[in-house]
Image (cartoon, rainbow, N blue to C red; front, side, top):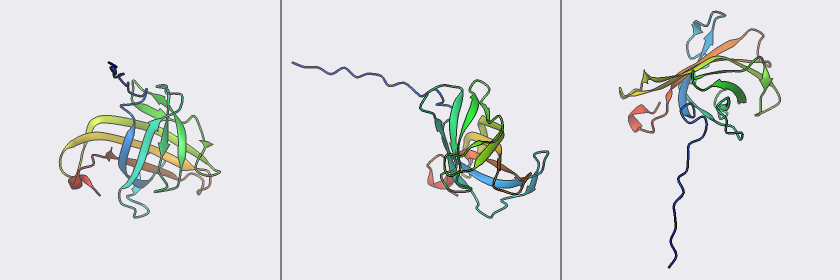
Length: 152
């Protein structure tokens, strides 16, 4: 008789920061305030944050999945503080360019979805070296729930 023992699979090192998000892209002023809401008329767009191949709590990927500027960037992560950023402009893995992410954070249970349910919130600022110098975008939204009532 042969028996199988199931091995417990653990979480990744960035589990509470990883996920799919629905965000709005606003044009931001230098002080971070919103200058133009939904500046390209995209509405809410999906993005993803996920673990790197190193599986460490000090870095993760931010990927707009080609829904805004087509960027995929490796960011520095402070897992305990739930914050992330790049030190300066870093390589974009989607195409040859550079991207800067600043003041990124995940706020747990701080958002309210369209259906009224609580969800995690994400916010960060992003700049691109192939955009007009000094242009800053604020990307903010909530963790994707999968519920029809929360779809954009």
